[in-house]
Length: 147
Ligand code: DQA
Image (tube, rainbow, N blue to C red):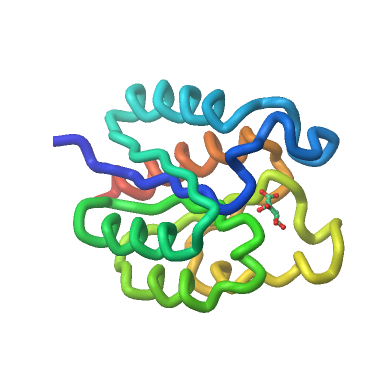
């Protein structure tokens, strides 16, 4: 059975494509999902791709991934900068975690420079636009192929 990679997206990413396109680009989250689906099929992986504006959903999904998944790719969006609870949930997982930010958070306001999730992330991709999801998935496939 194919390994399942959870790709989780935090608040406001539902509006990707419309939201500050000069920062986040014009691709929608559904475009990103479709590209990830295609790449996952090629890599022999299955993905669960979700978005929520609610912190507790992201926590519940990390806990679900802990039971059913082989890895998590997460863009916690603004919760990156505030959520010890998401970090705690990820700290209960033993599989690979890759954090993605579409924009280069280090080039932006200082409050975006720190992410709680980075303390747990095995890999971190920032500033590569929505392609960052595909880079993360490619690296996740490499990590999981070593199992
Ligand atoms: C983001 C960066 C965060 O600072 C911001 O709050 C987001 C998106 C990114 O993908 O670049 O919502 O995570």
